Image 1: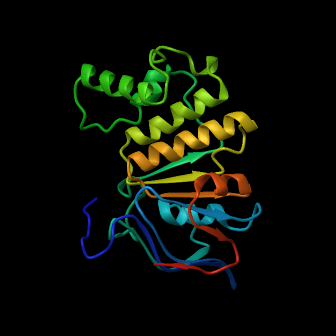
Image 2 (image 1 turned 90 degrees about the vertical axis):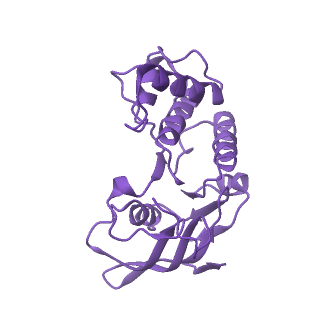
Length: 223
């Protein structure tokens, strides 16, 4: 995705509103800078996942989107999902049960990376970054919840996204694992200078992110 130098890097919402019939669900006008986390909070059914769908290009036609969503200056409107270079983590890891941990990670690699050795080295480096060195041949079924979350994170990052979305990504982890996994995700995102948007109903997620918080039903404006 080419960067438009007329706009600041990061994820930018320019007068974005999303409505269903006559009901406005979302209003955002702000920037998410590289390495920053914007938290969008609200109860189930309030429209949080609808915002993520608008960013990824999967918004159902029943919804009406106005305004512009830009990533590193490029308007995302009209781009197919695969061209948007946006990664997303869900509360379920969605690891392929018939593939090893290493093969799951290799699934995220771009086709441009050629050669079995080069691809294996990239997978091993990704595992090492999150403390799972030597796990490439493991069956995903043998992993703990925290380990599965780390594999899912690295598979997403191996696709080289330019923004990261978190859809209640920590909600199924117990308190200890939640804190540990959350800290890791935010640290890796900061290290890679990725703008992050997380949607959650848990205030501890927002506190851990340390960035701006937007509550559904309010207009978020920040330049």
